[in-house]
Length: 521
Image 1 (cartoon, one colour):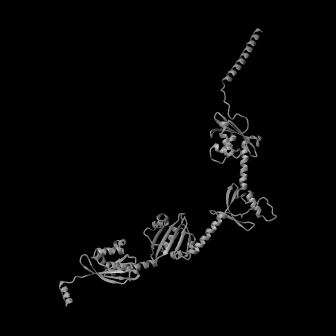
Image 2: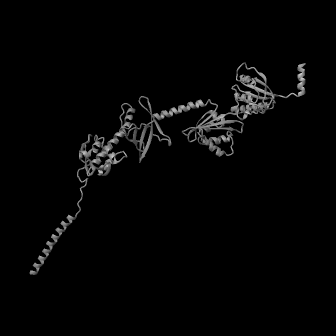
Image 3: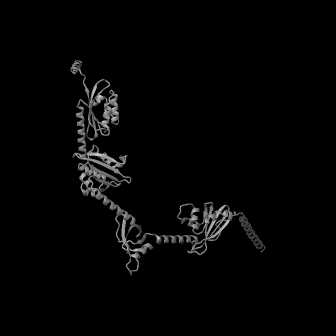
């Protein structure tokens, strides 16, 4: 009995000691726990909290992060926050920058849905808090500020779509319209017959047809007042549905119509030219040509009407022998195609001598936008006349060179234009080497230097310059070497003047004495 009592006392004492030790250990562990610093976001109030160091964002709450993400600007967090606050809180940025003087700030928004803004400085950091004044949650488990930002963004998007000056609608794969913006509905209402009401699905404004690939889908609508308006349709496929935008295209249509009118006018104008004209676009495809082009190249109209490339045109001309055959045709064709690179002065010009005997002048004029104008002109008659004229001149020079009389011809302007070999030998003066010095004044000065003083040179200058009655004259002059010259100056047609010189051969002494005696007798 005593043993049991002793055992109970021991167990009780042990239990009391264990409890006491547990209480002491808990108290000691509590004292050892680190002291947590109070968080800037520890408040239980609902709102968006921003923490800035100057304009640098240090931290923000999830609701604040959602507000910053919804701003369209790509600037820093401070600028994005100001773009959100400025329409709602007048002078908010200036008042936030003055927090160093005020210490704290509280503002209420002037919008239909009130917001409260509070700002204060804590340890050199700016703490901005936005609170929804209504405080009720729109959706369970969602922050009111996030919900508010989403609702405002949705309202803005709805206003943008409703006021957009373009027609927007969504249709199914079968073409039935399941949604349309206000602009579409208003235009549809204007085009409805009197007494007809709108019904879903909405009727289509445009004919249902698939657009041509690679070309703009442009449609025309006729309004009640008879005015025609143009739209350009752009489609976006979204699953089994299509979102379609109809953009106004009146200006584009008018510009293209004016361009077509200009092309028609140019075509009619170029049709009367005797010069072949072909205009290629920047892709080097033929866009415009005149009838003379077909006559000169021998190419059929149906070939040119298919808008062939410049390479195809040159190949077709080569087959018909209407281009010269160079030694390296490929390199020549490549150079011709790249006229804008080969033409340093902004144009390309070449003369083609064809196997048929015809001669073409080819002119290529590149344009800054990449277009190229090719001009062909038949200059066969001109080249024939030029060759004949050149042959006549060469024949005339040959005849003059066959004369033993020194001849020089001056134009009405007083320029030496022709002389023969006897003239160059007599006066030691070849004007063919430099015609710029062969003026009347310079040539007469040369004659005066090589001869004795005589009034004949002044008389010739007066005759050649058009003074006096333009009567021919003959005279004599003495060269510095003692030879005697007979000078004959004759006016020619067109105001030209010819000077002819002949050296008087010396008379033998016996003959001279006999002549003197005969004169004395």
